[in-house]
Length: 375
Image 1 (cartoon, rainbow, N blue to C red):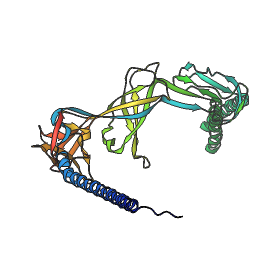
Image 2: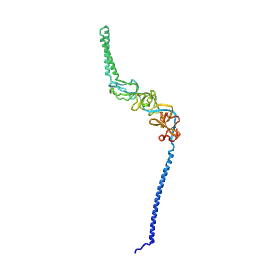
Image 3: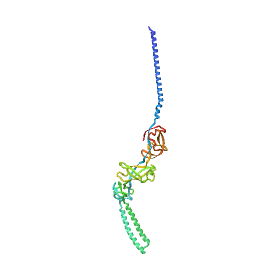
Image 4: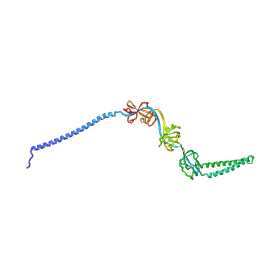
């Protein structure tokens, strides 16, 4: 038999169900409220950052830029130029024969000094010597014949034409003898000047021709030096101008003087070749050595100077940033001589001006400037 549930139990279960639904609805409402409050707080923070951002950035943007400066002054200034050079013998020549022949005597002390006129090479010349003797005998005979015909001419024994022909034969023989002697002299090769002999390229007994290189001779008692300078300095390279240079392996400085310059400027490099004479001699100076040449091109005892980094090249001119009353003013300047640190200003600045040397890419006209260091 089915028993029925009491009335008060069904009522109590119904009340519990409604209570649970009310609690769930209340929790959902609180969650939605919390999400809305969090979203509103995030928006408020964002607005606050926007409002506070410009205010915080304002003082940084308006802060003066810290730079270094230099006060324009006068000082002795000279422009120096350093270029590479090459040492070379004062004179150097290749020893070659004038005629072909076989060497019968070779006197080439490699690497040694020889005096001017020292016999270096002797070629075979016996055939020429025999020809010379033959001509000399013929000359003696023809000379006696000419003397007899001269006596006959005085007494009318021969005509003037016959005597002239005998004199012509004598003169022809004399010319032939001179020609043979010149050929004999070409079989002997002498040192053209005092100098050091190089390495020989032939041996005794070799047959040589005018194209054969025998050896070289160099005058190393005095040296020359060559270097090139940019064309804008060409008018300063006058004869006698002093030059200093150094070489690798030597601590001392050597002196030279300009001997001559090339007549034209090299079109490819736009440079002028200069030749100088080295003063004095030193064992450290060897022909062919590399030299570092120093040139003092111009000098001014009272030059108005500024640091080289203060000059800003422009398309048509040069300008500098001048500090005045806490702000920047740009001025166009004309520069003169310079060295590694300073440059001369010939126009655009005056003594005592304050020139900015750092932060030149950051500053603008009317920028607020604070000097952190003044030289």
